[in-house]
Image (cartoon, rainbow, N blue to C red; front, side, top):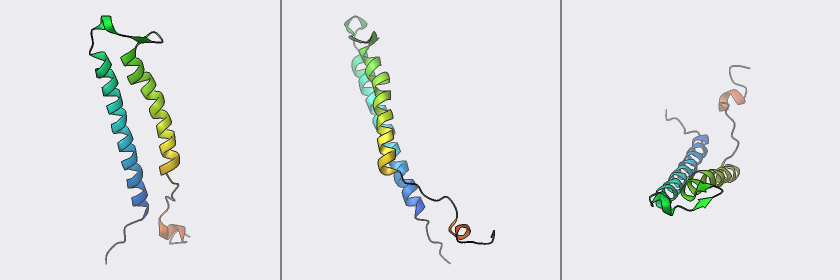
Length: 95
């Protein structure tokens, strides 16, 4: 007897892939700003709101941007799925 794969796994895998992509983009964002702007001589740094630009763009702005992107991604890609087994939801042995 071959078991049929639960279709909820497809949704879970899709959600996991989207979040991994978002994580990779966050790491790339942080790396490019932190090392792109931060490798200069500290005497040449520019400042945003009293913080070095590399820190502001990589840590502060990156946090805000990727928090907003996470909210958007969850609203667009995530779906509510029932967590009950199909058998128990149909009135299986526990009823």
